[in-house]
Length: 277
Ligand SMILES: NC(=O)c1ccc[n+]([C@@H]2O[C@H](COP(=O)([O-])OP(=O)(O)OC[C@H]3O[C@@H](n4cnc5c(N)ncnc54)[C@H](OP(=O)(O)O)[C@@H]3O)[C@@H](O)[C@H]2O)c1
Image 1 (spheres, rainbow, N blue to C red):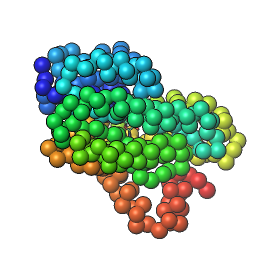
Image 2 (cartoon, helix red, strand yellow):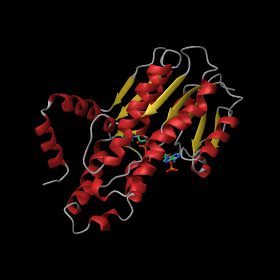
Image 3 (cartoon, helix red, strand yellow):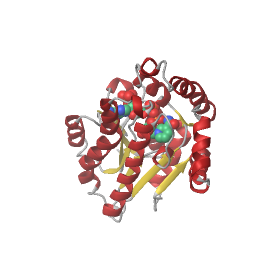
Image 4 (tube, helix red, strand yellow):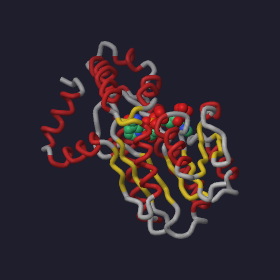
């Protein structure tokens, strides 16, 4: 039985699933959680793995997950679950914005509060809270207003939590750029009737541009979920964990560029890259 356990949200696919394997390979026990337990079937059973249903928008599932792991030495929590609600702000439905925040922001904080009492049982400095934000928590792109806003909020939550409890429990903020995962397939499923909603408006070509060009970019140049997971693990496992982990050259350079490029030029470039005339 492993001596230390990490709970990860959103392990059905992508970064979360890859992180399960990395943590197990390095001897950590993993509480792999997902909305749908069947999505964890391909994870090899073992005494270093516990699979639990957890929907970050469902308080009952969060509370029962917390009760189900009380017997384990929980050292770390990785708030990974999230998705991207795309669409121009003008066409965004209030419920779409609400659900984006329920999942990426409020769910993340409710999960954190639910597992903090267990992590507090660790020796001072030994526990870890990891928030997976995004480069889009540091800058905004068109067509992703709801997602940009949610990830900016995650950055603020991580910075605040670190001020409040960081001396006892290090809080690590993860800021990936494009990663190969189910993220883009999901965002196109989630945007539902967006293409017909914007058909015939000035947004039509922007939505089409986003669906074709940006997806290609992530598919061709995105980092693998496994490499991203390894970066997250190394930060979490470090004796002195970093405050921030910027993952991917795109995330690194975009954040530098945002700081040094004059705002009118920055906006011009982003509009051009996104097909906004
Ligand atoms: N991929 C990128 O380019 C990228 C870049 C920067 C940041 N990120 C962030 O990285 C994190 C992981 O994303 P990914 O790239 O690995 O995408 P992914 O493959 O789509 O994985 C997202 C995970 O979040 C889960 N999830 C969504 N809503 C949930 C809910 N209400 N409760 C529990 N789990 C939920 C999904 O579960 P279901 O299968 O049930 O939907 C899935 O397991 C996200 O926070 C994302 O914003 C991704």
